[in-house]
Length: 115
Length: 116
Image: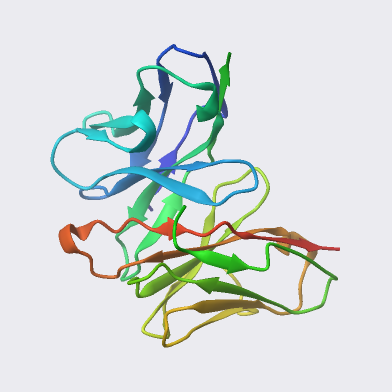
């Protein structure tokens, strides 16, 4: 079965410091990977995706993610965190086992950026 | 903000009742997916609609049903509500076949359902 894991329930970082939110995946074949962000009482906002090509993917709001096939990881990164980045972050993989464009989500990581 | 809208924003129902949630897709998108997000968890796939037909279903009982209309908007219906149905229900629209195989889904703000 395909899955993603987010090993950290919460990540704390000081404003201005680099941040990393971790994600590992278990997929047969080449994965389609996504990061979404959720602010309180809001839906999910698409940040970035990896389908194929360069292992470093750039997305919205200065975020980027590095795809590492040997480590089956897709960690989300940002060089300098902002207080406004504080939110819930979800990693997801597209389920390729059927005809649906279905996403399988991790359990989420709460990012807290302290001023 | 995406072009996906959902109504209502919040809803309180009693156990055993029925509920209908609505979703309008982003312009140009032909596929709608519904997800359930329980408190403290990631979204779980309920089902997907394409060309007004169910195109795949997650591990949810038949009392969860849906519709897609010719304008690609959609409804999620839940019968015989249970306390565990309390959750945020998210609608997402996408293109089933998109150039470059992008496959990203765009989510609405969700409907918060509370079952008492």
